[in-house]
Amino acid sequence: MDAQCYFRLSGEHPTLPLSELKAILESIAPDSTVKAYYRPLALVECRPCRARVVVDGVLRRAGLIKSGGLLLGIFSDEEHLEREAKRILDALAGHGVRGPLRVEAHRLLGLWRGASTARVTRLLASLLGEGGVGATPRSRTVLEVLYAEGVIVVGLRLAVLDTRGFAERSPARRPFFKPGPLDQRLSRALVNLARLRPGGVFWDPFCGTGGIALEACLVGAGRCLCGDINLEMAYGSQRNLEHYSQGPPSLSYIGDALHPPVRGGIDAVATDPPYGRSTSLGGRTRRILYRGFLEAALSLLRKGSYLVFAAPEAERPHEIASSLGYEVIESHYMYVHGSLVREIVVARAP
Image (cartoon, rainbow, N blue to C red; front, side, top):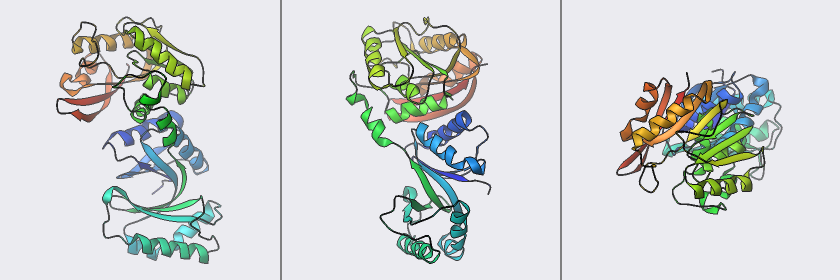
């Protein structure tokens, strides 16, 4: 295995977290690749000298990735880990890590029910002591043993997701609030799936209260444009953007997504169009609305740029995008309630 990093993915959705990780790597570290996936852990190959930078960069942008660190060893079971435990000391020395460390062991997703995590924790703590690294439960530097699907991964944790920041931006805590917006971590994931690069131009034509656009600003958009046909939403989203964003100026406008007052040069689009229950479709059917928005976006997106949008699965939104010439990269499905399954489409402009 040539991987240098590991990432612990959220178990909240079966496919979105791994796709988000791949998209972030494509945006900030295109020479890095996912080499293996042992649910919910992804192992990533990158240049060894950049491993710490890659882990930090991913966790600064992520929405559905819990933590990441340096990969120290992969083991088939606890006996294998116990036999080869000294390899972990060698790996720590190779990274220039000096102790003391805190040892933690976690069974992920309820796997490995018969595991002796306490014994493994004591074993590694003792090994660290004998090797001169040292172990203490008070250390902020964590050596973690992660029981994933089919393997046990040992790594040095470097970064964790800033969940406090997401909580501070939750919809109910914004200056302008209306019920129904996407969760902030999902909004961040949509922006990442759109491969927004630092300094790029971002567009959300159905911005609502501005949650997706806000996340685009926070991951480094050079310019953020968002609009809504509803006057109250357009003004409210501008309030939210101004309250949270510390980057370049962002603009929320009043406008129809099918005839946007926006020029070309858009680098990434992520949006959650209305579904027609508690929001207006402007007198159009869903299909007409989605098709019209996708046609408008074609003339604005740079060649090869990504567009991500959510729509009811029943409308088969991936087929609408494909029929207009987009290259549909993938779809993700989310159960919302008995009559709605949301399809998240990731597409690339021709």
